[in-house]
Image (cartoon, rainbow, N blue to C red):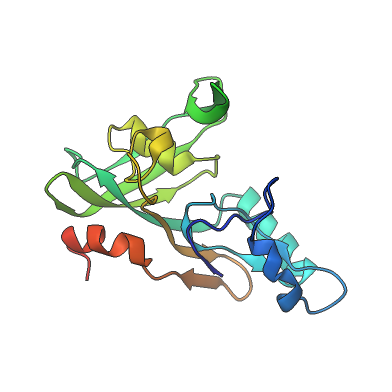
Length: 198
């Protein structure tokens, strides 16, 4: 599905809508559907949902083998000095007051993200991120670690407003392969257009 920004995948403690609210409409048998992976509440874009148990197991195996190709687009603060690069920075969860976030930790499991600049304008850049691992908040924490937090990411220094992060495309090496692409959400269009999109 093309998950809207702001919609959590699971119901929160305080209630409210979530992706799981739609499962009844998509159910094809007695069980399912199931989430094949997760997206942060404020990230928009491609979310894989399995309607059959066999599809879920195949998708989970692909994610576990790191053979799923994921592409994210973001509008970040500032313009990187390089046109592309690789961030190899292990991350671990840390508590900050009553909240938490991911922070660099050399003892944590690997976290690797490839990135390249797709466009830029004064004070911001449009970046494509291709994570090779799937750590919590990986792209958000990695963008901040290179000095270019994602716009609207108050947790990692990107300021207030809507998070400018899109799960743009995903490809699962199933039989046949599953490929999906999400459109740019309304809240990101102005920033990406300023950087040359469209």
